[in-house]
Length: 283
Image 1 (cartoon, rainbow, N blue to C red):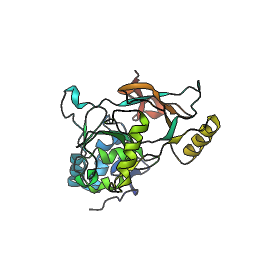
Image 2: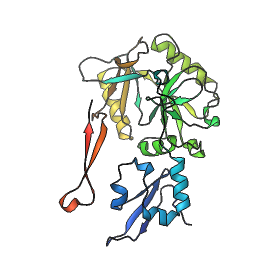
Image 3: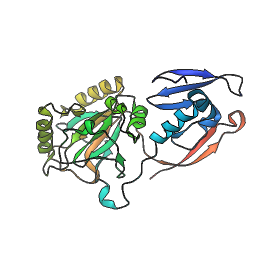
Image 4: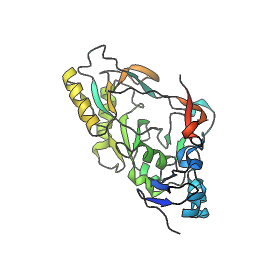
């Protein structure tokens, strides 16, 4: 049967007067029909009769099987990595001489010396060729496809079939928690690690000293103009801490926050039959 290549779309006629649009973005298939839009499942787990008819029942079953939800390795807390989390810079003090880097829109991944774990302790099923050459010491970084490609990144790293889609991904490393020392020592370890050039699917995130407020604003504008999220600033001499710390700051023009979707509400009036709103639980 016909299928959609990555980036392609197609029109199919349904019960509505106007055709529905099917799309494939990085292996995530979508449909504009209400049945697809109103599901409470993650977008990569959704399907509908139009997708099944277009791609075939077997193809859809194989796709959904490959994208089974991540399951915790165990409920034991030792498998949950103790990651360093950033606070928001409120323009309340000078960041001159802090280490400055681009804030990546990827998926946070902790390398424990043999496998990738999410912040919740879930396993990312990376192929062996992807992890080849990584050290037996912990690394902190992000699985990243590119700017404005978060959805594509998620669709790849949540797969459990260790597919060739991982060739689009890079593990961008920004810290080495296994090195007990100030940030400059951890940064030097990463420089030596990547100096060999034997890590084709891993990158050492470029981090440079901030020259002051003017340079910070110029770099922030440059990063955002090319589709970046913002900047990260690390305090010189700081140790790797578990939890949210003032030694790591995120700088953005527009602020966001994390929340958990706890309910989907149906639309009303002209939006009847569609998703109307979501109820989000904040910290």
